[in-house]
Each structure stands twice: as structure tokens, then as C-alpha cells.
Image (cartoon, rainbow, N blue to C red):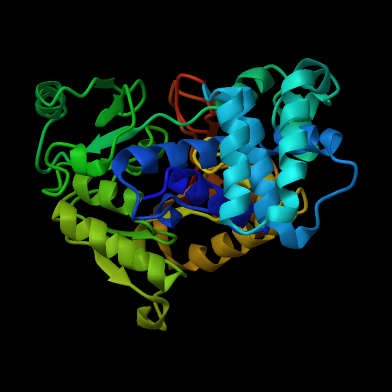
Length: 427
């Protein structure tokens, strides 16, 4: 394995984002050893998270923009800037490794450019940084920075700070197989620092991120990886034995599995529009030993009016509350996407509502912090459904909104999720 293999893997991940594609942990080179893989992930995710800032710095260093087809060269420069600006990499090593990457990728024309840009940045870092706009300095695109400032003026600083750090690794103990106390003891024995989460009764927050293979009993279904904010969903639907619950947007299965763990005598049905991601629900349910009925779109009955006692609608959204876990959102999401998500969310609610029994509950969930996808979507739905009313969530966590409760991404806390519970009129 060449010394630059980890950096090369990071370059490819950053290039994906620069060309408009999302990147996931599974995209990293599987030939890397654990140490190299960790470095590649740190470099790629750090660079991707800081892209609005790094790109603004790079523009000051270039006499003309780099052609779009040369995304790898741009990625080399951006990861080089990130190493100099935010990592402990010695300046000379960051420059030399960046030049070596250009050679390895047969981009010899760019060697002088890379060398010159990075050395200029080393000399003029302070003045170049002082020239950044407030949004770029906060490593956010202008529209996102302004939206956060406008909607959450008192909390904006903490939201921005939380978005710029890696999210903590949280676990959910499978209460059908283990207790929270017992699993905390297992982690202690394994030398893994941890503590109970502040919000979720089955939640554990790890002091440091580690591979799931290193978690005691993971393969035996003792725990799942899930943020504490997402673990609140199961407690907001009070399910009686024998009742039918539909998780309509279930993949990858975290909330559906938690419902099955919390209400083992209920009948849980999991669906998702993405058939490939629905396989993840099946994988998780099997590992956890949970009897979830998993249905693809071609398996849904043609007539199922008023078939479910409860429905969980964890709908597609901007992901603005989970940027620290998916930093490519900063670069790939557009302001115009909010209106599109709003319409999609409203349509999902209108499609699901006839499937809910009279007297039943629908829990609406997003991982967004913006009212256009949250309160406004619910209010638009209520305007069209006189059988629907808000069932107030009386909890101490989060902030009360017009129709629900909002958790905001917190530097030392949870992700940013929105919850609203609706009740259908009738017995």
C-alpha cells in the first residue's frame, strides 16, 4: 500500500461531492487498513464539511477557476488547505503529499499550481481568512447561513458550531435482549468510555467513535447505532398489544426496529420507496431478532383504508438537522429544495391519512430545522383534513413550535429533529 493511499481515497470522496454526488463511509477504499481508513475518513469528511470555507479561500489563491472536469485537482488543493488549516499535518508534508497525489493521478500539469497555492496559503493564511464572508468563515453556504440566522437567531451560533463538528456516536440498547445497565457494564469491561444519553432511556453516548465490529454483542443484536434524537420516536406512539403500526418511510430501519423492541406484542409493518434500502431494514431486523413485516411497493394491498392504528412518517427532507453526520448536505442542498420537500411531504401525508384508523395517531418526523418542512407542512395538511388535529407533545426536551417540538443540533447534544403527532377523529 502506497503511503498516499489514504489521501487518494479521500481525494476521490471529495471529488464525488464536487461533481454533485453524495458520499458515504462505504465509498472509502476497502483495501485500507483500519488506521489508513480512519485517516481517509477524517480528511474527507473534514474537507467536505469545511468546503464552503475552503472553496472561498481557494478562490482567492487562483488567478482563474479550475475547470469542472478537473475535480480531482480541485480536491487535492482543498484537502491540502484543510490539512494546513485544520489538521496537525506539518505544512511541508501537506504540500509534498498533495504534489505526490497529482503525480500519482497523472496530473503533472497541476504540480506547479498546487505547490504555489498551498505555499501562498501557508504564508498568507491570516489575511486570506480575514477576507471571508461571515457565512464562509462559518463554513456554510450563504443561503443556509442566512436561513439559520433568520429562523433561529438566538440559537444560530450553537447550530453552526454543531454542524461543523463530527456527530457523537450513540447507541440504542435492544431492550428485548439486554438492559442499559448491563450494556454499560459490557462497554466498561471492553475499555470503551460511555454514558447514558440525556434524552433517550435506552440510549448510550460513546466517548469516541469506533467500528461496530468493536462493540460488544453487536452481531448478536444487543445494540444499534442511532442518535438519541431519533430514539424519541418510539416513545411518542403509545402502542397497545395487537395494534398495527406502519413505518411508511422505514429505511434503513432504525425507528421500525425500535418500535418492535418497545412494543413486542404489536404488529410492525415497514415500507420504503427504495427497494435496495429496504433490504437494510431486513438486515437490521434479523440481527436484532425482531419480527417486522417488510413490504416493497409491489407488495402493498390495493385496498387498505383505515388499516393501521398508528403511522410513523419519517419523511424525506433537507437533512438540515443532521449536517454533522452528512456534511455533503452543505454543498449539495439548494435553497429551492425546501419548497420541493414541502410539497413531497404534504403529498405523503395526504396519501397516508386514509390508511389510519379513526382515533389513530400519525407521528410526523423530519431531520430538518426549517419551518417550511415542519410547521408549514403540517398546517397545509390540516387545512385539507378536517378529521386531523394536533395531539400536543408534552415533553421537556426541545422547543415547542406552533404544532410540534423541535430539537436543534447541539454541540454536546442531539441531532436536530422535528416531531409532530396528529390524531384522527373518531373512536
